[in-house]
Amino acid sequence: MTGRESGGSPTARPGWTVELYRRGRELELMHRAMGFATLALITLAPLLIVVAAADPLHRGGFALWLVDGMDLDARSATVLSEVFSPPREVVGSTSVWGGVLLAVFGVSFGASVQNGYERVWRLPAGPWHRIWRQAVWLCALMAYLYAQVQTRTGLAGTYRTLMSVAVGVVFFWWSPHFLLGRQVRWRLLLPGALATMAGLAGLRAFSDLVFTPLIVKNAVSYGAIGTILVVESWLIGVGFVVYGGALVGHLFCDRTGHLLRHEEPPRARH
Image (cartoon, rainbow, N blue to C red; front, side):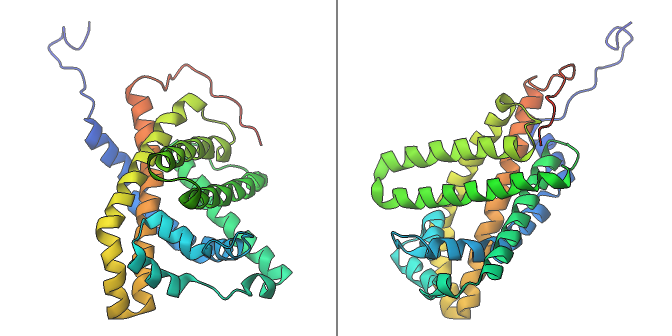
């Protein structure tokens, strides 16, 4: 006898918004986004500064990478460049051991992102020897950021927007598949990649409206630390979108029946 026939009512599933909020709390999304921002500023930014300074085309360095990502105007870009532009000899003054430490710190950032994806997809932590995946992902991340900046002058208008979105979708589609050792199928990861890019587009618009004038105002009021605080706030937004987009993709697949319980997941590849 079914629940309906016995006078009972079937258990109703919570709405999309309620379920997404519940999963976000379970993931500690805001706390994880703040950790993403802190690690990005402390462990990833120094490595990117050196890599950007080694650019043979010399197109603005790391400051331009931030300006492009935050979509700042000329005045805010000047303020940001005064804080994040290293001396030209930064590459030559970086020792071998210093470069190794920067790489190790950068890989730790990759490990944090991997852990976030594992929590989103409710997978066990990967083995320690999967660290090579984090290193490869870190190189891919730097290539992705570099390519995005290069299109700033090579392409314009709609063409650049379409190229940036397409490359971004591919990167955020590939990232969890690679970091998770191919434990999640490609078709399940596409909704999350699309949600992530939509969120980054929204964050870019928000940055243009809020962070652009705020950088100038904070620079006058608090100096360099005010500029860094704005950048840190933007990085929190990036972390929120990266993990939140993956959460939205996972929920979408769950609600639309793509996560079939009887399917055996593919074996993890190390």
